[in-house]
Length: 243
Ligand SMILES: C[S@@+](CC[C@H](N)C(=O)[O-])C[C@H]1O[C@@H](n2cnc3c(N)ncnc32)[C@H](O)[C@@H]1O
Image 1 (cartoon, helix red, strand yellow):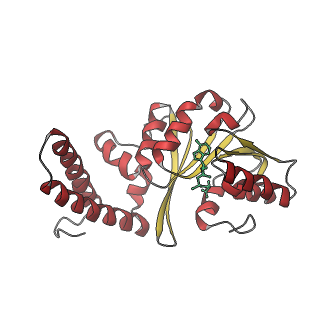
Image 2 (cartoon, protein in one colour; image 1 turned 180 degrees about the horizontal axis):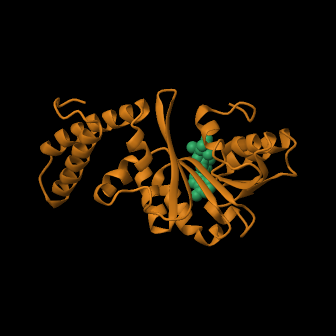
């Protein structure tokens, strides 16, 4: 991959960056996304933020190689510490777990004042991101799920607004897990993801049945059984045990 030709996943993330925006990409290994966004004229200015030495060095050399130092500031820092207050209107965070993305947003809240759009691509645990958005008054405005090289990725796009708008009162917990837009669409990537999760949860339940029973395992069991039940309903395949 290079900044000319991004992966399908990062191209999808880039497609949600508004034209002319000032964007910060947090966790920007190689700075591929900011380089692409600036070169294509999507972003007017970008920050590539990285916490780790290796990826930070790769980002610095990539930006130098592309001659984009005037328009991309590569900075080392944990999460939004790499961003100065008020300098960006869009933030992308891709390729990390949902819990980490939620932590970065939570700890960097003070830097979000001028930010209008968040484009978030959790590799796992997207529900933690949806939960954070709801608690912090960000409205999920769109979602995408896609497959690349046998892996399935979700992209969540949020703006300031009415955080509960995309959710229905009676099905909110399930929608937080599956994604309210993705659950409506139920495309093939969605179905593959939740079929695999359903099978995986079944294996975990089998293991739990062999483990010593205590309040912790009972709680875990209950949670997985609930998730399996709603996944089964979402995939509308009540008749067979295997979806
Ligand atoms: C798997 S890579 C993803 C790189 C790129 N965003 C992508 O989607 O292809 C995750 C990157 O996030 C960085 N990272 C992890 N935690 C971070 C944090 N708290 N702040 C900034 N960067 C972080 C890691 O060092 C790593 O380079």
